[in-house]
Image (cartoon, rainbow, N blue to C red; front, top):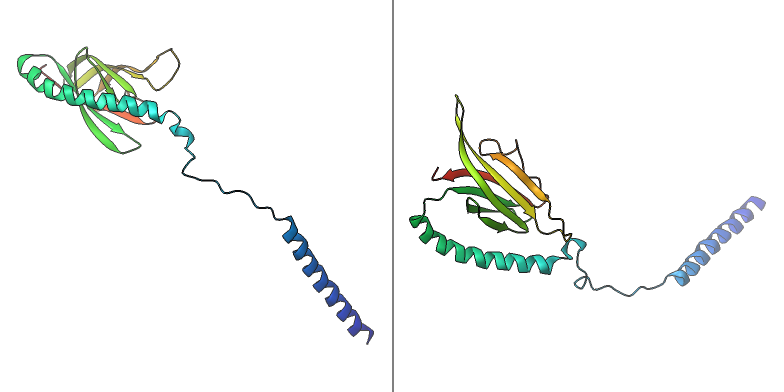
Length: 176
């Protein structure tokens, strides 16, 4: 009979221990005020307003340039570089027609074409262009070229323009 009493005392002790630990845990819970997630902005959007202003200015300039370019194309025999631009965040591509010596903007990039020509090899002909690309998103005054060199239409990865958000590659040259 002693063994039966020990089991009873042991089970009462365990029941009391479990019940008392739950009641003590309830007293330790503290409530925290809720955070409105709509008021928080991600850290990568800190300069979002400034970049949106630049994009709006570039878009309005591009619309004006596109209408005036059609008139200029008929009058001039300039050499143009056709560039395909990709925004990796939105997955949208844009076609850029850039005259030699002219600067154009794509997002925060400033693109300037200096030369475009055909590379004649004994086996095939390739289009090559000399481009200078600056990233204007950086706030320091030292505007270093993101890319400064020759790029090839047949193999854009040979001399690639490395940027985490944008990708550029030439497609052709006109009026060569």
